[in-house]
Amino acid sequence: MRAHRHIRSAVAVSVVLLTILAGSTGMAAAPSASAASSATTLSLSPNTGPAGSTLTASGRGFPRNTAVTVTMGTTRLAVQTRANGTFSADLTVPNTTTSILPVTATVGTVTASASFTVSFAPVSTAVDPAATTTLTQQAITTSAPISASRLRFGVATPGGALANSELDAVATLVNESPSIVMSYKDFNQALSIAELDSVRARGATSLITWEPWVWGGGLSQPAYSSTRITDGTYDTYLTQWGQALAAWGQPVMLRYGHEMNGNWYPWADSVNGNAPGDYVAAWRHVHEVVAAAGATNVSWVWSPNIPYTGSTPLAGLYPGAAYVDVVALDGYNWGTSAAWSTWQAPAALFDTGLAQLRALAPGKQIIIAETSSAEAGGSKSKWNTALVAYLAKQPDVTGFVWFHFLKETDWRINSSTTSTSSLTKALAARSVN
View 1: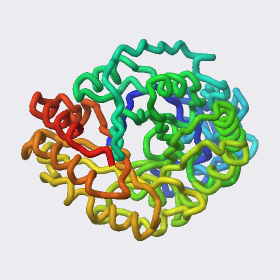
View 2: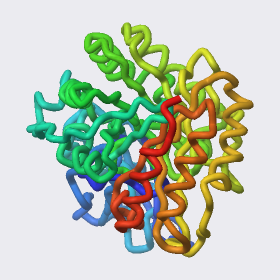
View 3: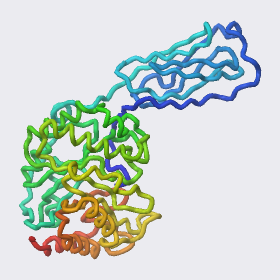
View 4: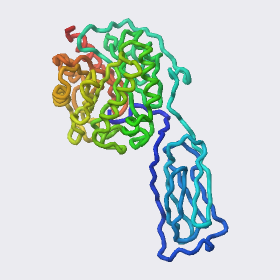
């Protein structure tokens, strides 16, 4: 989904990205260093923060209308002082393992310095987040069965894979336990064995959406550009995931870098410094590292957004049959809940994308990895009925995951009593085969 699904505190670890905002300069010739004030100073605001954060370096008492060299770690840049001997520059803190970064400004024999303290939020290397975070696994209380239908019913809820109370509530709503439970992880999180065990205890399959960024860091996260993935920067982390998945040993679905044909995530080819082909290279590298760690129990799910006018063509984003086990689509009926949207029936929403998936990946099974409907603009009840009927007629579509969230609009199954009852009846009516 285009909008962020989670509101979390996270720190983006970034490579060097410098933007210099120098003040206006005068036209007079630069004086000698002796013209500088004896009170030459350099201040930083703020003077502490994580890699990727922005600081302003401000200098006073420097020679007027002169190029000053500002050094931060291994970065050197030239800034022109103003007519009063001051300057300012906005800097982005580079990726570093050093806790104290010296920042200096020098012209001739005149120099001033200050220190920036780098705070760290390193990639977790714990085998399970429970090693560092208190996780509460809720008891399973539902008696609703899992359907034997070929068209599997799955769900994603705000609490994630351990939120059995949420998953049980969904099962109670539709009188069916989900056989796929989807959760989300960014690149600052370890694999949770507790979550895998909890989903397996329900008789369901875990579908992990693995997002190569840090939540809360925004679209521009150069530390997580596709080339950084491909060049091995995160190989240790990827290997840890692969080893943990291999040790767990049960079937799991892994959806890396979804909706890559849009422009709202930093792993898309069109943003964050990524060039055409970078996404495919990153996908293949991640697959190779995880597989080399022994994780043969992973089904790799390639999951674009439904194609739309202006989206990146899927052909240039598909990693190839050897690297993909399942292909998927994300598609939502926004109805009239947004100024730009209109009501779309399931066939209108998915026909084009499914045709493209079949052409790109003939013979691969297909799932709808995220879907739901708004209430505004039509009948969600009828849409739910039509969705299940439509998907059940597609012989290669083996499941769909309902995005059970109250976010941009009310995507939940129980956004209305009619929505709940229609989905319940539609699920019950679908055939086993």
